[in-house]
Length: 70
Image 1 (cartoon, helix red, strand yellow):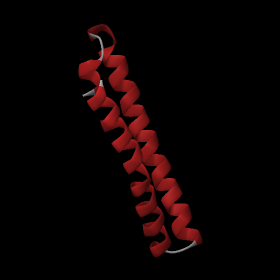
Image 2 (cartoon, helix red, strand yellow):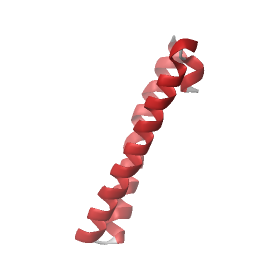
Image 3 (tube, helix red, strand yellow):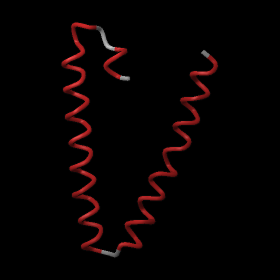
């Protein structure tokens, strides 16, 4: 979806940037979850993950409303 909206002459660079960002986010999430598990418990990790997932909802709703009004 991202590369489809990019101009043809920048698609490869855009795809590479997206791939790096996804890989870094995955690595960061793995490191953070490992540190949380080492310091606390799986229950704490689950609660934090659930709260982060719920925190995304307002941003998605705002984005949807903004797109619908344009």
